[in-house]
Image 1 (tube, protein in one colour):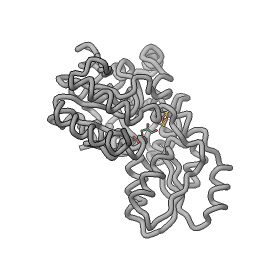
Image 2 (tube, rainbow, N blue to C red; image 1 turned 60 degrees about the horizontal axis):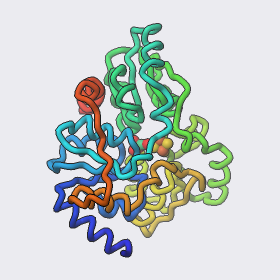
Image 3 (spheres, rainbow, N blue to C red; image 1 turned 180 degrees about the vertical axis):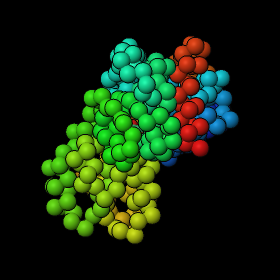
Length: 311
Ligand code: 13P
Ligand code: SF4
């Protein structure tokens, strides 16, 4: 079966099985094409809460599918590729953060959404890269503990200097691997291009950018800009999606190794396999996200708080 035939089968099976497919923008083009909802992690959280479909199939990494389950506990939520985790989400656990909180109980704990459900149970409010600035500004408390990404945290801290924001050492290994040398090389090769980066990059890289923001922030900036060339400092699938969408503009990856191996574990055949399993084909397997009610209740609070504060 070729890619177009598989996509046609997927569209049929989605209807038959009443499944909404949620696809993070770091997924490959052929997966984005069959999505019901696509976007950054904030948008997908809201989409997961609002969809009427009985089943949700998540194409992304584990914490994103978990977030979908927290927001739609009555639905069956599946992940296309069960091994797709986010290394950042595993860097800190509830015990570590509880110990830090015990020493500094007056801080509001702000967790990047790239955390496990278990860790979310000891945090006060979640943020995503697109909502972090608004939410940290909206928190009444001046004293914040921001976990786990110290690069995103430094970007927030820099723009909200009036708050006392404590950071711990953690972050995305993919974005943190980008260096100032990569910026110098890309700028030398494409002197007319604007540099757009994700705030998970190191502060010295973000400081050199013309724009820093979430995956959807970067995409919207490039779409609206009247400039013609852009160096993209986030996962390389964003460079690819923008090139498909805006053929009259040129997009270059900031670094060839800006590839999230975990995001790339999901393939179109994984989506097809899951939908076949949901349609009753017992030779195929679907991987459901299962969490007990207490975990859901406790982990959900800080996501609800994120949605409330983001207005
Ligand atoms: P966004 O919130 O921008 O979608 O980022 C998610 C992520 O994992 C970035 O590496
Ligand atoms: Fe996690 Fe980084 Fe991959 Fe995003 S790009 S899912 S933060 S490892």
